[in-house]
Amino acid sequence: MTLKIWRFVTILLSALALGMAFCHALELPAKMQYPAELYITVQNSLYRAFGPPHIGAFIEVATPLAAIALAILVRKRRPAFQWTLIGLVAVLLAFPILFFAFTEPVNTVFREATPESIPPNWEQLRIQWEYSHLARFFCHLVGFSSLVIAVIAETSDHLHSS
Figure: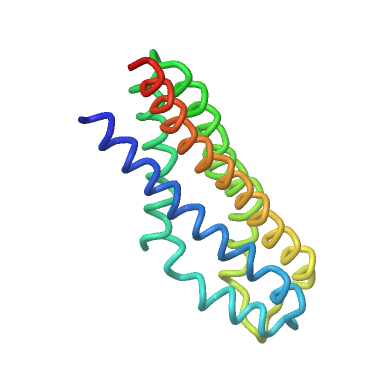
């Protein structure tokens, strides 16, 4: 029963992280057209709940931690372990790797910016922020999908062996 609950929690957290990333991916085309003043205003108002100390930050941190624990729980179960491991690697690529390498450095600059004090390289920063989130979306998509496939593969194997 513990494994079922842990799988549910991990898949739920992964789905929520995927949802946040999907929002960023859907916003990309419009935001790439925004003038600097509007872009900075949006960055510093719309995304407050995504970062610390709000729910978005909790989800970002909890998802890979849950996936690590799940991988440990299923380490002796094939093929669930392989699919869970793929999911874990994808989630870890999204957070913390891509986030801290590409997204957070831009967040740091934009948190200090105002419509009156726009960084001179704001367009390059916008590209980095938007496309790092697009890459994170694809990582979360692979991670979520792999975690679901792990359950399906194991369930399918169990049904065929009965």
